[in-house]
Image (cartoon, rainbow, N blue to C red; front, side, top):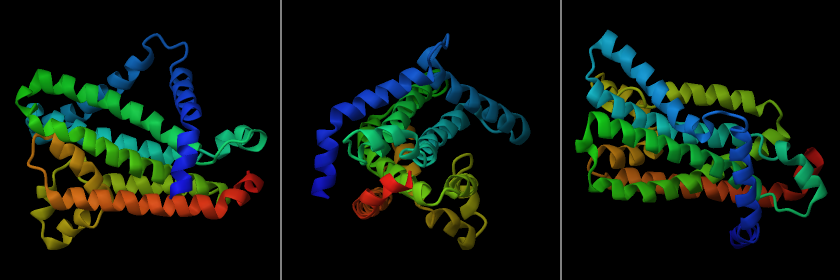
Length: 261
């Protein structure tokens, strides 16, 4: 892994420059600009929470922070995987014409998703301050640690998706379907207690789901829940496992990718 991280370090200025450029391009000529990154998760959460409040009589003061604490991490995961699939293809000009390292382009995607995540956290704290200030606890100090794990896992997911899409051009739509399925089997808009109450077989649905552990470390920190060491260890272990796979893919396919673009 040493050459992999050396290449990232040597490309750090290019990575930051491209990530900033992506953010600027995304909101160019928009009246609200990056404010949309806060308004969009706020609006989506309010719509879903309103429906749940009307139909299932949920307490919006409790449900709204819970919902945002799940949607925000999931948006990051989906962004790294979804946009990561096009990381190499969209950078074809750079890769073919300039002596740049392949490693930087998935990191570029991850940083863009990380910015969206940070804006989503701003939306979360606005909701908490309005509806449930009691959720602001010392557990929030765990958020930076969760973000570090997200950066590792997000970089790995983007790298793996970029490599697979380069060799298998039908991978991106297939990945979208898979992520959509995982969205519904991951406790994002419902609690784990709902599945657990239906029996051990249903409880296994989320316990065997790797995305659950990534989501839960952030949710526990945001909602003031007692951190679970097993959940954190699983999330950390999965992130390094994904990173190992990603580094191996880069090393094995580096010379071939240029010809596949």
